[in-house]
Image 1 (cartoon, protein in one colour):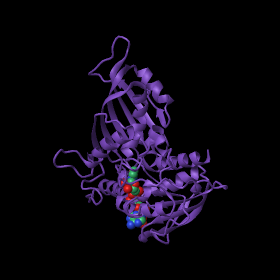
Image 2 (spheres, rainbow, N blue to C red):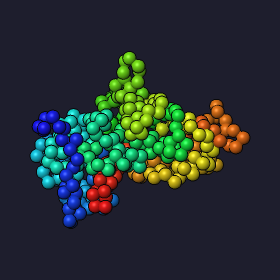
Image 3 (cartoon, rainbow, N blue to C red):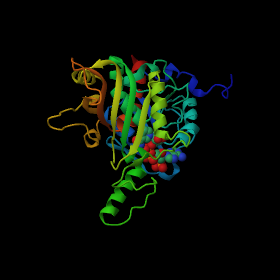
Image 4 (spheres, rainbow, N blue to C red):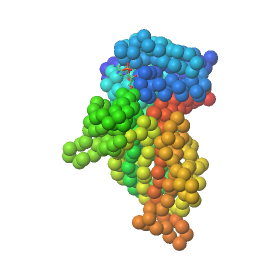
Length: 365
Ligand SMILES: NC(=O)c1ccc[n+]([C@@H]2O[C@H](COP(=O)([O-])OP(=O)(O)OC[C@H]3O[C@@H](n4cnc5c(N)ncnc54)[C@H](OP(=O)(O)O)[C@@H]3O)[C@@H](O)[C@H]2O)c1
């Protein structure tokens, strides 16, 4: 069949791409100058990846600049369809349009592509992966892997252990999303507006329609006029169903808050089997990627500040829903919790790097 009838990412990556005697890999980071791309470079260096070369790629605007990678500076090249020659793993942190245009070229050049944008997430041919939840999707070494939306990742890292232990029947979530979810320009907007408003000047929104300093507003994604659900909420609903391969009724309300970095979520769940708060804490403490901070006496719970820069999703305020009190054994099916997680790390860059690690470990194991 011709290349036009078989999308490149349907073809499993050729094993020889990852069967290198040296076990050193070449990486490309597309969008290396952006909020996610910078974090990818930092995490690759921190985690001591077996890397022989990192190619930093962005738009023409950034060509000729450089980015920090560990102790060195790497030059930034502009993206072209020739950018991926000799690249083993390409992590995309640019727009969906850029991914649609260039990810197929990267795959054709022999790279395994991990894309942070929404371009391929709902494509049934492309695995949508949170390694802790459905890492087995990587077993066939696909050539193109989609990273889920940041809010989806944080929610499912926290809820998947409960789904496995007790079953999940119903989920409500309200998000408190940091401005950096909309990229570097949005972080700059919050800094500028905060300074302006403290100095008594007006804040003029550019990235967001509403002022983001000293304000809280409904998520800036497009609202579906027919049902009132916005794009971010739709992503959480649809991506969760794809990742879990099960459609658990899920009601999200997505909100932007004047926080620079790390999203938080207030979550209420109905379990299939009743559980006590201690049992929930125990399950969450044993789960990968989570840290329980749940000290009622000290009023010490997750915050975006505590989550910023960290790899774990912080979970706390674990309690029975007061509208559905526990039974005589201290168990109920209705639980509430609160979480905070660094969406630039676990919600994007770290998850992508963990996918790369898993692909590499499969090929060398
Ligand atoms: N921010 C988050 O928390 C988050 C979480 C999950 C997923 N994502 C997704 O990750 C992607 C990146 O988001 P971000 O927050 O990092 O955005 P960002 O800070 O605005 O960075 C965008 C990056 O894309 C590059 N870029 C733009 N146009 C390009 C082009 N034509 N060719 C090559 N590179 C181009 C930019 O390069 P220049 O500097 O040269 O313009 C920059 O490096 C988006 O798809 C976003 O939806 C973001």
